[in-house]
Amino acid sequence: MVVANTRWRDIAAAGLLCLSLSASALADEPGPRLSDAWLTTLQGSQTRVAWSHAFALREPTAQRLESQRKRLINELETLLIGARVAGNATLSGGLAAWRQALAETPALPARTPGRHDLPWLGANLRHDPPLSQVRHWGYCKAPGWVELWHLGGISRLDWRPGMTLDHALDALPGDAYKAAQRAVVIAPNGVQASRGIAAWNHQATPLTPGTRVMVALPEGRERSGGLPVSVRQEIAIINERLPAYLATRLPGDECTLQGKGEEE
Image (cartoon, rainbow, N blue to C red):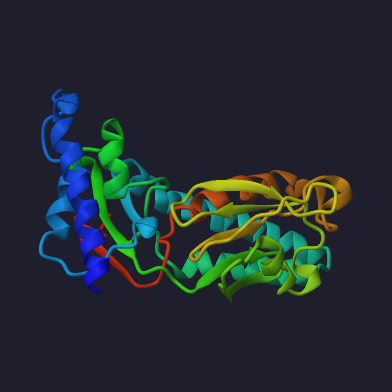
């Protein structure tokens, strides 16, 4: 514990030094910044922050999230009806689980995808946002899971060292992903990466704790799982916008928040 706290203090001190040396670069935007808030938050704390699971929610992101959540719920309802009409029990069950999860989980708290940790801000001062533009910030304890949104529903799997996307998919029933061509992997910092999961486009992909994965809905008439042609637009919308929304979810369950609160 002493070693961990020493390393944490060294990191914070290095961030403060970088900010102090380069303060003139931000003279055109006066006022406290997110880095200042981090330093204030961490002063006197004995908690070691997992910077890989640190986050911040910027105001522009916060203002859009509720409308995005409602739009996704509506699009999933349309797809769910189509899957039921087509008699696709696996997909209809999966879409129902996706819709329920979105309906039962409020848009806030959340985070803006990307890095907002103190070490990164200290090295990238021009990306250090004014605190007036930040709704809240914080960090999560690195969880012991990876979360998969697949064609049969939502599953949380225990993470283990060396875990890959192949390992995670192999732990699912075959019909939960076999028809899919790709998946979107969302890192703990919210950065998305589209990865091939079919035989012809397979890409080896390691997974870290707190990663979320969305198995993309099959697209194209020949791979649509029998869904009506009329819902092709909804499929494309979900494949594009659901991963973007999942990238705003906090990267863990045990999280500490600071800031203006969670109200709209």
